[in-house]
Amino acid sequence: MTSNCYIVVDEESKHCFCIDPASEKSEREIEYIEQNGLTLEYIFLTHEHTDHTWGVNALIERFPSVKVVCSEICKQNLAEEFQAYFLFYYDNPDYQYTVCKVDNTVEELKGFLEWRNKTITFFPTPGHSMGSVCIFLNGMLFTGDAIMQTKPYINKRNGSKELFFESAKKVIETFNPETVVFPGHGDSFLLKNYKN
Image (tube, rainbow, N blue to C red; front, side):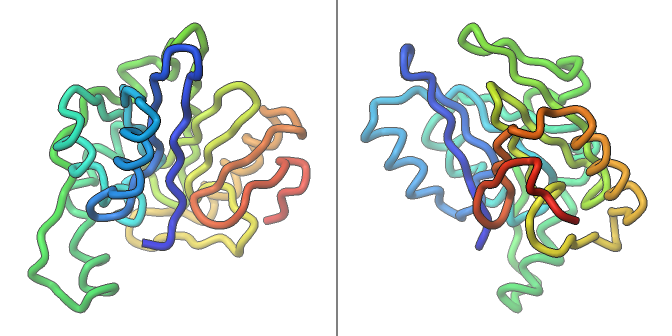
């Protein structure tokens, strides 16, 4: 899948979390984690689309103690997402894939997670999909497909153009313009340079 995956590392403890693993076998992610002696604690999903979740099960298989976190709507929709993607990308309607577990939802965590003396904030951004969230930590905003420098794509099955632009407006109003945006596709950029 041509989407971005991020591994965020706490250098002091050598613990890390992964955002949106989308390669089927997560080979690069596993190699990076193991070669650097890291402990994978969490997998965070910005939304439910398969091009952001396909590698989750491979990471769980290699690192069984890892916890998966996403929004409640994302959790509900994960089981149905594989069908359209694998028919479209691989012309294979019989391929079966779904994320095998979700340990916590953003709502259960009340939108915050204390991690290695830092606070991770989950910011709901419905629009591209109804389960979309952005993830904020220390001046970095991981946006999935909610904020990108490319023309917005709104999923007609479970998205909303109106909510997409409302969410983008809320992000711009909430976060510092110097916040570094790490999108689901394409290169990072400063929030002040965002154009939709």
